[in-house]
Image (cartoon, rainbow, N blue to C red; front, side, top):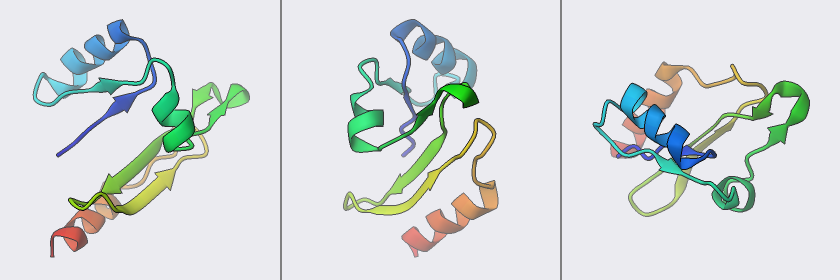
Length: 91
């Protein structure tokens, strides 16, 4: 299951849900930044225009199997890398 978490306000989360999730899955929002700051330790950099991307894969037992923290807004893992992680979790 996919659980996107936006550190944003409710209105923008709804726009993202309609535009990108196509109403197929929920997008959660972290308006008080608790999850991003306290749990995921996701960085916010003023000179890089905001919160840095993060991708965390958690297995069915709640164990983090993969964590990727980007250094800039365009720094995200390749799809093949993430799919490989997912394949290895399910095997």
